[in-house]
Every structure is written in C-alpha cells, then in structure tokens.
Length: 369
Image 1 (cartoon, rainbow, N blue to C red):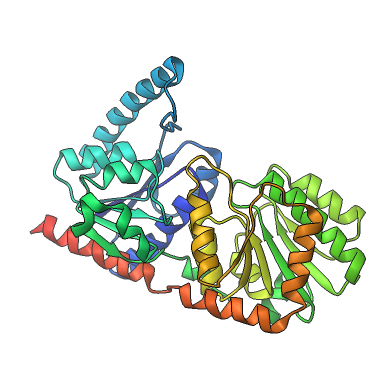
Image 2: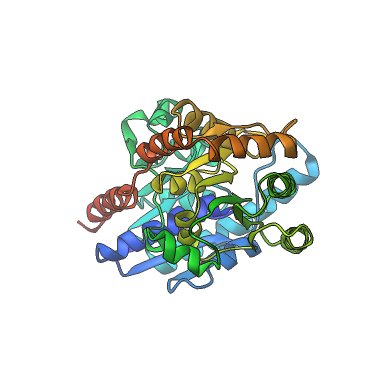
C-alpha cells in the first residue's frame, strides 16, 4: 500500500503526520511519502525521516482581498497543482492523508479529482480554512476533539473521533534519567517553557522574565527547561546566564520526552500537538494561546481550561509578575497541581495514532480491491 501524508506550515501539522507514519509502518505499510512546504521549519522536522519527502511552495490563502497577494496565491497555486499532478501520477498512492494547512490543499484536491481516497485530520478544536473546505470532498474526516464534530455539519457522516496522533517513540517515564539527560536535578521543582516549533517572542520574553522573578523569590529551589525556537535562543540563553537562573535553554529538543518527564508544570502555547502530548504525560499546564486571526489555539486552551486540565491566560495584558505569580500558585499548591494534572491525564489519548492508521488502512483496502 502506498500512502501520501500531506502536512506543513507548523510543527502542529507535521508532528501528527510523523506519528501516523510510525503507526502505518507497524501495520505493514512500506511506501510512505511526505508532502510538505519549502519552509525551513518543515525541512528541519522532516530531514531525518527515512521516507521520501517532497516540498511545495509556501502559499497561505489570503485572509482579505488584495490584488497582489491574490495574484501571488493563484500563481503559486497553479505551480503546486502541476507539481501535485506529477506526484499523484508518479507515486500512484492508494490513500492521501491531509493534516490541514496550506501544504495539504492542492495534493488532497488533485487526489480526489483522480478518485483516490482522501482522509483529512483536524488537530484543533475549531477547524482551519483548508480542512473546512477539504471536508466536503474527503472520504473521512478525523478529529482530535469530540466537540469538533459540530463544525463539520456538511460532512457529519464522515467524521470519526481519532484523537491527535502522538510521537510515542519519544516517550520517557523516568524522571531521574530524563533530568540527568538534560543536566538537571530530579529533586527540584521544574518548569517547562515551550514557545512552539516556530518560537514565540512574547512568550519567551514574558516567561524568562517570570523565571527571573521566581529566582529572586525562591533562589535555586525551582529550575527551568526553556525551549525558545531558533530566533530567540541566543537572547534568552544570555538572559538566563546573566541572571543565573537555574535550568537549561534549548532552541529545539529532539528528545522532548525528557523535558516532559522531568517537569512538574508546563507553560505553553495551545497548539494541539503540544497540549495533547502534555496531556499524555498528565502535566499541569498554563496555556497562553497565540493570538492568530482565527483563534484556533484560543479555543483549544478554553476547552482544556473548562475540563480543569489547564490554566488559560490571554497574551494581552499578561505581565512577567502575573505569570510568575500563576506559576508559583500552582507549584506551591501540591493539591491544586495534582487536580490539574489528573484532569489533563484524562484528555490524553495514546491510541490516537493507531485509530487513525486503522482508518487509513480501511480506505486503502477499498482502493486495492
């Protein structure tokens, strides 16, 4: 069976596709191909994959009408459609799986034109524009949140609740070993700060400032793991060194499972990949959603907050002092931290990748008959 996985634009789209690839391999699928965008981030995430990867242009759909942006979009769409036609003809896939974002639109659309079964997966509670459009032609629509079904009213009969596929290969449940791998003490309370795969300057500045306030209040009793993304890495690292904040700063951490296992509390954006991985580890979390126009992350954060699985904070008006107070309020109250962790754990879904792989296999078997 040959399967194309189309994902790109952010780690939140790509990481679930990587997790699905692992599950498909377990099911005996040998021919797996990735289609992503030419962004450096996408290339970096996929560079060590043993599967063949193809890269299309970076071509987000314009939010409003602009003659120049629309002309650029249409011209790139034409080129991507031609490239997708070539890939479909060359690879002859039995199934194409789209994970949303502008990298999946053309290849999924072309596959459907040729009668190839299509499955799309939505990571967020509220679907993005690409998946809302593609759901009308897809054979299956898999969702990460049960409540997402109501956003696919025209495709309700095709919706399956799979959860968000997680990178189970990076799991680590040994706090002592994981802390040692990171050069940290397993005895100290540990805060994990995650700016997301693309980094987040506001979160990096605010969280590092909060870490400094906590250092002044608690000394070396609390340590930090700070994942900055490439852009802010040097500045944040210098800030930690200058203020002697205990912890480690990384631009990116391949063995993210060590950071999850070694931490007691996570500060994160509210992308689906991150929050479901944290839920799998039953981590207490403070979610600060990225203020994007469609507010996908905001709805994710609100959902987790209503479930008692996270504290939800808006970026607007959030100060370093406010964040430091929220962090200490959770860390110093073991019962409260335990309640949040317990609620988060109930949202984790380790079987998501297997469930999604089964849906892909069902579609593939229909095609091969």
